Length: 88
Image 1: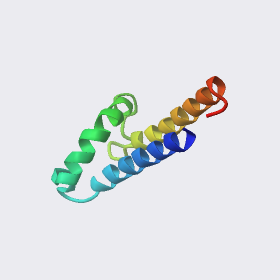
Image 2 (image 1 turned 45 degrees about the vertical axis):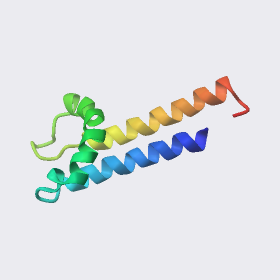
Image 3 (image 1 turned 180 degrees about the horizontal axis):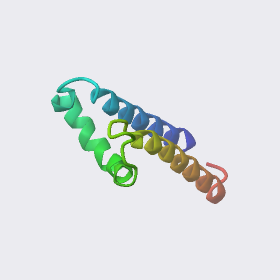
Image 4 (image 1 turned 90 degrees about the horizontal axis):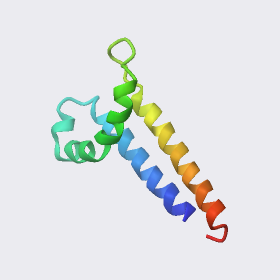
């Protein structure tokens, strides 16, 4: 079960990184891949963008905070599963 949670967390982290990297390329977010990643990643990132303003109006650190939060949630979920069902 831990491997499954870690794998899902890693895949979603790579999706966030890919989405952020697409913002560096002109019109890349309008491509099929950009729109697909946007539909999957933007609802999660919007939570953090609401509370973390861009630094200097240009540098958005909300994806970094979102990745850290995702990792902490995955670690917490693993800890809860270990507590409830130690044999899994």
